[in-house]
Image 1 (cartoon, one colour):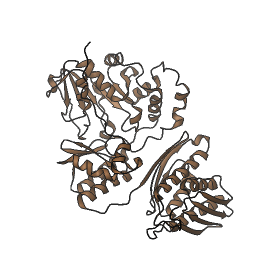
Image 2 (cartoon, rainbow, N blue to C red):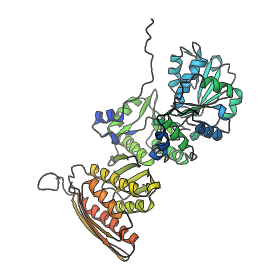
Image 3 (tube, rainbow, N blue to C red):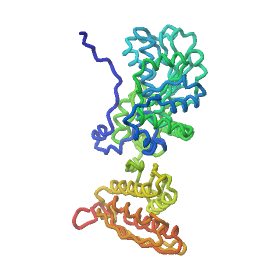
Image 4 (cartoon, rainbow, N blue to C red):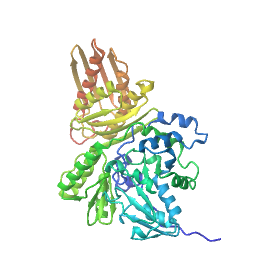
Length: 507
């Protein structure tokens, strides 16, 4: 029996836990700029989306996810017979190499491109050649990873053409018209759709080539849960306008730092650099994970808050600029909700809240603004069953982040008190950042969840909180209560020496 040799294989970077341990950070403080993925999952990626699939998880999907394939076909205006599902587009990259180039030749356009093409060629026993007109299989990465450029599709090919459009939405490309010429087009849900962890991709091809691909796939290589997430994601058209605007903003800021990002048609930027590996090492202590390539640094574009952390780290390393205070980051995920928190305490009152629960989003916004906090809190909850889970988990997530931000609570005033009128309503709040979860809340009339929201916050943040608020209008009463707590919080967070504010020496 012949003993197979291990191949040169795709190497995944270390986990966030491992990287955090290297530099003494918490895993939540690590920001990945090395994966070219969305900053957040789509709104549709929530437990309710998976409920039906979970209820039938003991069964196989006999129809090969026909609703999902039909939705993809409608999106591209092709027949369902032109659609093949796979475990990410990587499954098809390996598959087409085995089908069209086993023991033959493979070319890539451009030559400096996605490394998976080379690994697929190795698995197929194929040889990489420079001239695409002489290859049995030609991969065209368009737009290209890792450079972000838009490449031309070569002509005069004798081999099978595969166009990888993983970043198509960012570049505004769509080559489905080439299906009639025999091209195979690869797409993924990992990038613009924000479902990298679900591992869903698809191939578009003429009916004959689609049957060639699917006849060589393992049965149902996509899981029922992943298929459900992909189908839900297609319910809302992808809009990457904000990401493209953010990409251009980051490019301008990089140029202002004296760096040279290339024009990009993707969700990342390639920055030419002599020693990118050294820069990767220099950025890691800031919690910034970048990826080095020969001749340059590849930086994913995330959202403004994350990208500003990257830009500030670069400014400190390249220009000696004063580093900005860090953010406390936290994700709370339960069966009912998924919430992402980024917090600076104290901050400058820059607040953005979006959980879909409008009234209590507004209440938390008032609390954070008047508390002088910088807070971004976004996510989704099961609003179909009412507001309880979403409101409670929102304030618990905020409280958990606040407790983490306060640490041992050294160097703060600790106590704060405020009275706030709101038309006919009047609220009084006293806060002690004590490390002990104690609360006495009286909001009358309560619009429904106001007292419970503050109780959840006090419990998670480990603070002592007394709030009384009365009036005629429930909205006014609640708003006065949240503003009063915010203003009391602002007092308690005022810097005061360097000691822990307790004669015991700890809180």
